[in-house]
Amino acid sequence: MEQHQIEHIFLLHKQEEKRKARLVFLCQIGLLAIFIALWETAARLQWVDVLLFSSPSRIWVMFLEKLSDLSLFTHTGITVMETVVGFLLGTIFGTLIATAIWWSPFLSRVLEPYLIIANSMPKVALGPLFIVGLGPGIISIIATTLSVSIIITTLVIYSSFREVNPQYTKVMQTFGATKQQIFRKVILPATTPTIVSTLKVNVGLSWVGVIVGEFLVAQKGLGYLIIYGFQVFNFTLVLMSLFVIAIVAAVMYQGVSYLEKRLTSQFK
Image 1 (tube, helix red, strand yellow):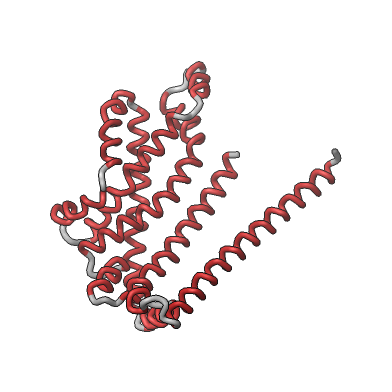
Image 2: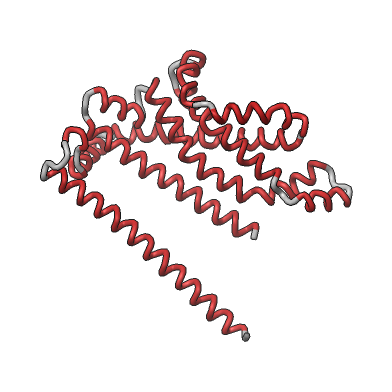
């Protein structure tokens, strides 16, 4: 097969992938539009209780009101800051712990049962302990976020370290490589895609930890708006806050997905 034919086939395949991606995006937008239209119709025709379920139009009006007085920017900024800090710390510390466990088989045998037990515990239940121990502030919220994400990160990355083909390690050992060289030249490059994929999981876990922490202690933030909305029976405020969380979390997720694609392409 000639070179220009191969390039033509590759170009057709690329165009087909773009067409499918556009079709998927249009279907996603269509489903969202249908859902919003049905929700608004049900609210206007009183098929659902507007007090409890509100309506898209009411949520939009409140969203614009909160934007106009800048309070939404304040609450969103605080929650995003806490989420990003918890997200980064959970990923970094989880990776470091997984590296330490891989590095020392003895430490792995000692800590592995405790990690499994810690993973099975309801971490959000530790929130009140963090509040008592660390005080009612941002630190206790970030600590709650770490308790949710760090164990999962450690277990996933450690498992990926162990699943690297042992033949690669044996080849490096044959040439006299040290453990540090094996980790830097074999283990880390082979598991980088997994580490990046773990970031996508941590996005959701970090949001869960932050919102739970704000439920318990915060005076500002999207979690505070949600719990305040429940207290005053303003469910439009609750749903508007959830709407903002969904948008910001989706943006963070897409950012991590883009990073994953870039790094994955480099390791192919």
